[in-house]
Each structure stands twice: as structure tokens, then as C-alpha cells.
Length: 349
Image (cartoon, rainbow, N blue to C red; front, side):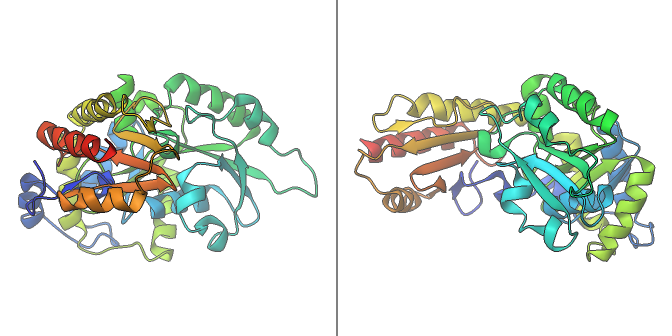
């Protein structure tokens, strides 16, 4: 089930196109002015999102990066500190927005191979009450943890983190761009998985296939403050229900099928792991991502591999100098995976 142009795209699940059902819903969506709170489709999407994650309210945003930024600016003031993993999306891929736009100081804690942060490191990261220190206001955890291999973070671990930070009056935010991948992989109800979090963001535009948008969820008071910050950042949209309609279809139809993407990631790993010259450098796939490293003693260059795969209509992306990440999604089926494995093995042979 490649795209209409025949391209099979493994670079990311951000490349997904909206389904036919989404396009139909977008064309007929009831709309209004969302800044005034009058878009019925957005209101439905936000309510549905909050209920799904067990929170009081939701806020539709143009992107996950903006949702994370809004969450940090709502939880923290200028000069406050947000603690996060050194492989987390907020640190690596959000253009330093929390510092540039919010004056929020990031403290980094090393991610363990399974995507978590050591509980002892978390305890040490909390600042004591000292005139020289910024005040620790927020911990950010990513689930699934992309750069650690798409690992899902368990409910038990999140509860353990919450039990450390809550007594210190520190909030916990979940960058849950792929939280539904995590819930499917762990067999958890989404609301149970994020029960310990004060706020959580998830993307509609990755594995759920909506063309645009993310939703930030939390308490009514949190979302009220977040809504004003969204406007301040230029994220207040008008007849946004045209976009929100696709998000509703995403929640209704796309979550329960994510295990198919996970199975296809495992198919890729099974098809490549015995190849000489490569290693599964992030371990066996847990969700919809496969990470490999081409060892230095193999003479094929990364550029050649990308170009040769593209000649066959297969797009792949790098995650390091000799590293690749292959991401499965709705627009990749079993035949696409087999074509990918066959061509990749041919080139590596």
C-alpha cells in the first residue's frame, strides 16, 4: 500500500497521508472560529482526546513541538528549570525553544538504553533550595522514546518518577508524540499509562495519519493557561475544524491498528539481522522503529545505499554517520516490507 506515486517511505511516520475517510470528514466538517471557542469539530476533538487520556481538558495545536513548548511555558516561568533526557525530543529537535522563547533552563539527565532515566539520577537532578540555583519545576519524559529505539515506557516506571517529583512540587510532562504506540505495545489503556502525568501531548500526524496537529491534555486550569500561551505563540487558528475532523477519524480508526506497524518493524528486523556488516544498534524493535548500524568494515557508503534504494522507489533516512532508522506506518504493507528487505539484502550482499 505505497503512496499514490508508488513511493515506499520508511524515513518517518510523519510522512503519512490522510486516509480517504479523513479527507471526506475534512470536506464536510462543521466549523467555527476556534479562537472564540466556537469550532464544534475542534471542541469535539479536544473533549475526545482528554477523555481518552483521562485528563480534564485538551488543546489542539499545529504541531507537537508547539504543544511541548506550550506545556513547558505553562508549567515554568523564566529562570525556572526543566529536567529532561539527553536523547529527548525537546532537547534534540525543538530548536531550543524553551530557552529562546521561555527563558527556561534545561538540565539534562542521561537516557538509559531502554529510554528511561535512572531514578537515582532523577533524585539528584532536583535542586535544593539555594539562592544560587534555578528552581526545578518540571520533568519531561518521552514515550515512546524515539532516539533510544522507539522504546515504550511503562506505567510502573512513570508512577515511580511521579512519586519522586510530586512531593517536591515538580510537575511531570509526557512528550507522548507516539503514546498510542506505547499503549499498544504494552497492552495498556492510554489513560492508565499516563495517569501519573500532569500533562501529556500526543501527535495526530504521525502513525495516526492526520495531516496536521497534536493535542495537549491536562487539567482545566492548565489548559486555560495553555490556550492563552498558544495564542501568544501564533498557534490560535480560526476554522481549524477542517483539520480537527481528520484528528477525530484518527482517534476513532487508527489507534487499534498500530500493532500492525509494530509487527512489520519486527519483520524488517528479522529480515536483516543475520546480514554481515550490520547490527541492530538499538536492539530488537519494540514499536514501529528499526535502528541499524552499518559496520565500518562494510564498503558500501550511506549515500550509495540511500540512492540505490531510492532508484527502487524506497526512501530511507539516516540517524547517524553509519546509522539508519526505518519507520513503519499505515502506508506500508507486508509486500512493501518484503520488497524493502529483498533490495536491502541485495545491496548489502
